[in-house]
Image (cartoon, rainbow, N blue to C red; front, side, top):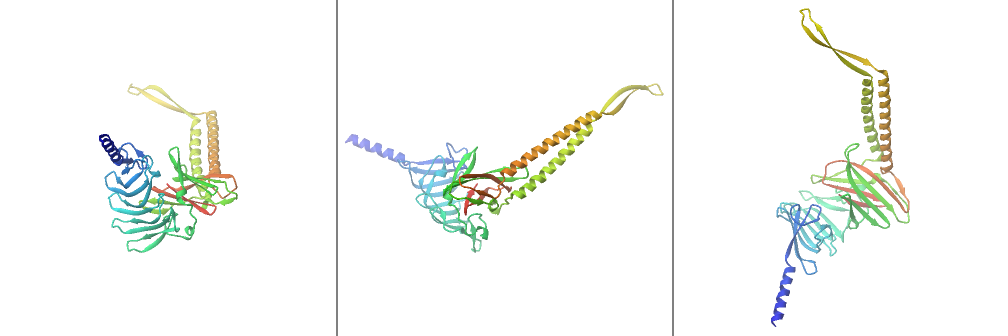
Length: 379
């Protein structure tokens, strides 16, 4: 009997230990950390013996203000992107004020009414989802007077004809991998794969460079028109439409910038070649004044060497020829890579890029229409 009592106590202690609340730390990308040194938020969670979260889970900003509260079916200690909330989840801003109410199904997909709240707890946005997919192509936005308007999911801007009635590929099907530390988002559905990666370039101005890869593994061909790509930028909390440059527009900027580069380089080369034909020498001499004083004088002689200038001119011509070739190579590379209207045949791949005029922002949305559907990317 004594042994049974000890075993029962040990079991009770183990059970109690398994249900202790743990503190998990995550960085800005949701990656798990061992310490709070570089953490952006922390989480209080209780796991059962099977490492399943039980009860309420609470997230906090590093200033200890609440960030989110709800239940979850999966909590990943190493990558929060793999965690799955369920039921109603409340979110808060960094001041600890309510910022939203979200609802999830058992698989962790948005399901039901989703609300964004202001600091007074009033609804400023309302959306409706069904198992991870919007039930409409718009969500509702409310102004300070409670007036309602419709915003597109694609641009987060008021609905227009160009954004109405679009078939959006379910965002829940979007996946992400990393290449040299940079995220590459992609979809694979119905025999098609569409991937997007972004970077910033400053060669011919400041731009976001949007790389697009489309693979057609379906049974049919289709036209892809990059002029239908749209971009939205979030700047200081407000969404604005990004300027996507067409191939023709961008090549005009390339040619204009290269023309200025060539003009300045040509001036520098010619000036250098012209001066190369001239050389000067200085001679020191001594003389006496009428009073008998001895003085030192310098005489500078400038001479011209036609052979030296000819050699320098030939070198300048060669340098300008090399610059011209380099510029041609760059133009050719851009021409080959910049996206243009193409028919994508069965079992073929299209790779290219478009440039978006740079504006400092904290969020960018990219929408790529492919074969009648819109693929939605967020960075």
